[in-house]
Image (cartoon, rainbow, N blue to C red; front, side, top):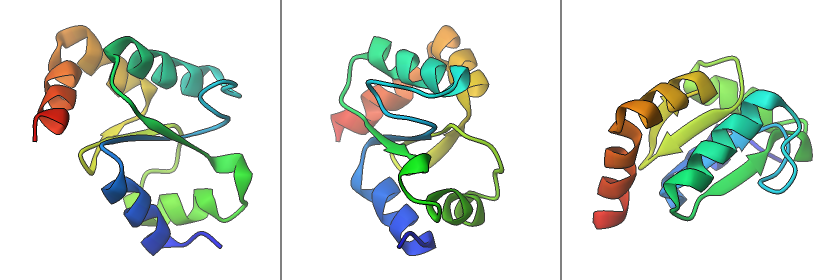
Length: 105
């Protein structure tokens, strides 16, 4: 059963993780698809947690972050935001810098 501790562990254990609707191979909404595509273009390994896999994931995620929508993108334990913010950061080059720093250490 998912709870805030499990959400925090997944975030801590992965340099990049996206909590999304669907999987890497089969996103189930346009926003999740956009976030996954951005990370595919960055080219570093990342994990996707499908919030539909367990009904407790989404409430635990919202409780952990205080952010009510998905996807939620995390790099080095920091919540970047949703797909719109990830896209803005990608276009400005800031996301690449955050990802590079995550994999440099």
